[in-house]
Image 1: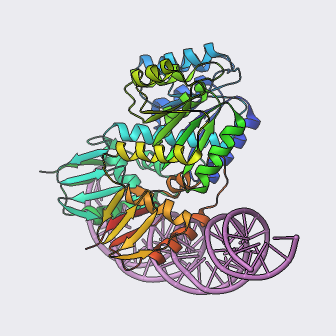
Image 2 (image 1 turned 135 degrees about the vertical axis):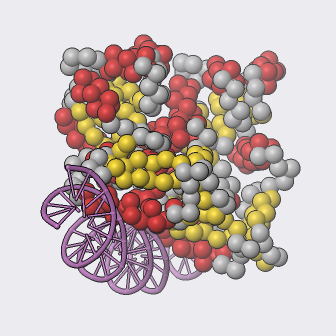
Length: 222
Length: 222
DNA sequence: CCGAAACTGACATCAACCTGACAGGTATAA
DNA sequence: TTATACCTGTCAGGTTGATGTCAGTTTCGG
């Protein structure tokens, strides 16, 4: 699960980041709506945790501009005020959940998990692509009727390619999806995972082409 | 069976939670309709026990808003007043059952079981899976004709796997079923219960496979 | 034909997982 | 109450397997 946290209180942000990292989730932190906006423009996340009170543009403004642009990203709102108006307007604006400060980190994490799970369940989580099918709920991959066993890294990479068919992805794009923010990686690690993935899915109609000097491109070969 | 209890009387709530936990069910307790609403929006339960008289939004309001949203969750209404109007309106609003206070905890539990059973579309509480059968009322497990004695934790885990065959379950998914909200757990505790469960059901055709780095997957081996 | 980029087999590392032993807690019976 | 049995989480040690690194090779563009 990859999460973007938008929160200007540094102490709170740190504990959230720490807790999520501990629990094996990738979480990036920004302190303003403007920064969140620009990161969301070119990076992909599974969900957004958004504080309402932010210096400059408020959380509500960010949320509504996302929804105007038809961005379906699951959003969980954090609000310091317990008043109902905030909640109502948050849900009206298209938030998927809200939490009133102060809250229990475990509860935050549980709600995030639920949100992401629900989002995945919504899109009937079966991706067909030629003779290859991927079920994101069960994390199983089939070529024809045969089940292929993939390792976690390979699953992540395959999922990325399947959701970005016919689009060029640089090694950095891929690494951003695979590694937590700040986690070190070498280009070679990505290549290695790719080698392994290619070996596993050979025999399928999904081809991952190398675009030398640029990146990779997945497409269906008939 | 995972239950959400909405009840503002703390003493009563405690005894219900205690009784259900004792009997191997996961039960979470909230004290208001508002809290119930937000939890239901993002977590999955098998049923809801709902007090009518609540501070703030009443049980009826919660129930009717659930049904307006086409939420089919089985609901059992608790009412302090024995008057017929309440019962009638409860059923009109889409409650599946009601109970008049004071009541016997055993009766409450029995009705809950019946409700969940009905929802699952089964006329009995017997789940068959290869040569293994599980009776959710009596909590007895048989391999072939031989009765297997399981501990409460093992029963909970087995029930979860049986109702989620061929689906990947993460350790967190499992823990959420086994432990009430806020209760601490370590991954190792889950592993330990699994080890014990596996030992008990060896000889059956039910296999619980480890998917390293991801979770577990139960399926029937022929 | 050269150099950079990509590929890939081998290996080391480390985290995930398994499991036997133990201990604290709770129910049950005397 | 005391004694007993049992349940269940924690700890520690061992095993397995996923994954990044390295190094040698291949491929490709210019």
